[in-house]
Image (cartoon, rainbow, N blue to C red; front, side):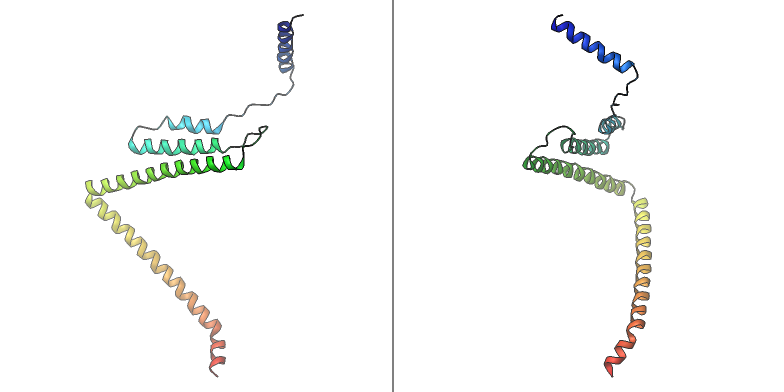
Length: 158
């Protein structure tokens, strides 16, 4: 029997083992591939492009720093360099998305000054209400502390 025939017979034996009901390890779908596929469905816009870049940077960062079982890991220096590069890329992409949100907000304020003013007034009213509630909580806490420590203060004065 030639080497080629032996390989073919071995291959047939493997395929028969699979069909004989022996459990085979299932290949799990790569979740990172699903993220990349979802990115292609988004409508095209500057914000969408920047979010795509952010997600791709995140996926690349995960792939570069992902440990694969059965492989010898890279040196700590290589891991550090790769992580630093990935974090810089991720930070750049996140900053780009943030800048795009700021640009869109500024554009909205310029195009709709009345709506923007009304929205800002609502935000300020909410902030004032939260600050008043917080001041009330602090006042109650201070009164409680004063009540609790008042006997100590009177003893010192005597």
